[in-house]
Length: 255
Length: 255
Image 1: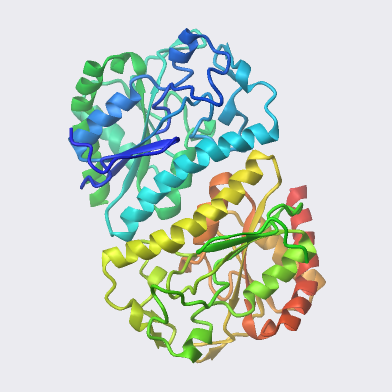
Image 2: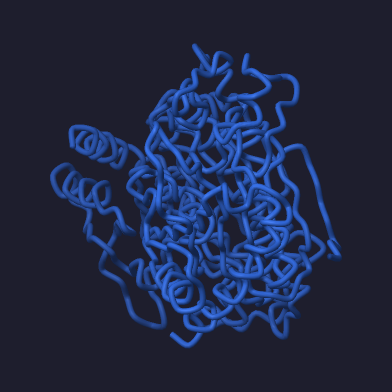
């Protein structure tokens, strides 16, 4: 894969920014890095590798899809437990003191200044980098569709999840519904709209912030992480999903 | 007026950023400066002073309101004819080739690269500066209401406009309706909702981009510019409007 025009800063990496395709992929939970000055937040190494710290497999899948779809990709470089880039800085779960069954010691008793420091170090530059890509594409007259890509744990609070591929929409449901239809037509994945959660759970912040103001078609993809646990699985999933996204894009473009 | 914590860059000035009030004022058309590398765009000096180049009186009124309401203020430093900060970079009228009855020679035949250069020099840094203020306030847990402030010409395409004070809303109409109610109760201004234009005309971009994603109450104010043509008139108008905004804010806060 040729990752030309790559730009990296502390909060965000933009790969493949001159790609010709319409899709701009966003992976807010790509990383389980715990850099200074925050460090491990008091988590064990096992916790730092677990799904609470990031979306395992999501970056591998994003890169494999970017290659197949000639898409640009913006991804995070710091664990979502330090700052969850898919949450505004007014949200308690932007810097969660508890996630699923895990207490996050380093997020207990944060002061407003602590929250401000993380928001300015991570949230603002990540979303500015993503906004810059959107502005650039719009100024150049390039078609742009925003797709955020996440993975979810097969077992949450002890409950197994049967869905394999969730597609979540915010105000504009065009693309999400087209993706579900294409997935049901082209694959045997257990695909569902607004599973394992939905906009009502506050998970569509990036779409609201970056796509909706410009009227850009958008959707959030959720892949069960046991299906993309290795790079090989992620490549195989990209082979299945790339035609799905292409068909859905064509359907939305036709209106 | 004490304008503490002022930050200025090429595209935006933030004044009074530590003000304690909930209102964040935004004045996208504050300036009729035509700096290099764009210069005058081929406009006469009279055209550079006219309402097509900026919103006359809007910055004076914004500053007078900021003082009375202890509000922060973000304002533009370059003419809207070089880049209209209340328009996304996909919009032709972001860099209009014609405005009301005026051709804008320097905006004819812009290339995609020309548009990109202006968007990256003006639109992106202005909105990043505004976003940074919102992020900062949200991270600190500060109540925030976004109000954009504009002025309009009393005669447009030869037609006189009777409305003196227009209040425009986008998806969230709470604050706009409360402002109209307060203006009708407290003043004798000819006040109207969604006059002299409305969101359907594409004039609520800043609200959509900056306030709506965070669920912040917001409104766009339009003052007829003959009522704020001098600094003294702007001060007098601020005396009339400050209680209106205070009453409207209280009404929205009560829900």
